[in-house]
Amino acid sequence: MHYNCLIIDDETDLAKMTCEYFQAFDVTCAWLDTSEKYFSFIKENTADLLLLDINLQKESGFSLCKKIREQSDIPILFISARQSDDDVLIALNIGGDDYIKKPYTLSVLLAKVKVMLKRMKSNQSQTECEGSAGLSCGNFRLEEETLKAFVKGREVVLKAKEFKLLKCLFEHRNTIVSKETLFDVVWGDAYFSDGTLNVHIRKLREKLEDNPNEPEMIRTIWGTGYMLEIEDED
Image 1: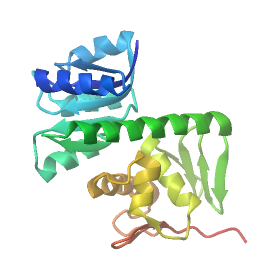
Image 2 (image 1 turned 120 degrees about the vertical axis):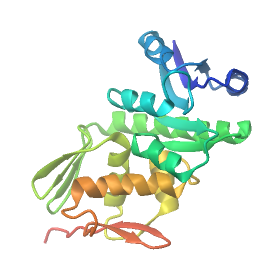
Image 3 (image 1 turned 90 degrees about the horizontal axis):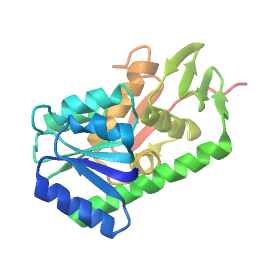
Image 4 (image 1 turned 45 degrees about the vertical axis):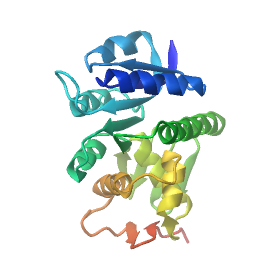
């Protein structure tokens, strides 16, 4: 069976309530209370996105996220009562797409999930229409079919979110792209935390720049956003 959303949370009452609330608004949802149930569940079912708690029985949500990322790019939104910035950074660094702190408001969480589902559907339709179109400028090229970038002849393999982010910057190359635009295009929500964007920008720099600590391609425009600087062909 296919679900829009899968919740993994051992706070049983909250998970059930969230699941029932989502389904009342036509977002199909299932929930599990332990991390070890995920892989048996996913053998017989599919889901568009995952809401994952950190403090689970036996295995943490961090550990499960790492395992999932070895085989899937399913969007993962961490939901946790842990409030520290360190937890947020860990979650984003290991492959999480966002971090939502408990207690959350059901209506706000539903709105965030719906926006992400809509964006995913739109991106899927666009990909099906565009096929394997390539984007190039000078010694820089993006290959949508394989999620690869080619920089000065060097091949760079990107994850799905990294590719979307780089593509957005490329399409507006040599101009400033606001943080709000990047959030909306890549995550489908203009209100994600700056930490989410900062982590993905850093990962891109580590893959693309000769010296990530002194970036020459992906420039930070303080207080505004970012700019991808590429020399056009003559």
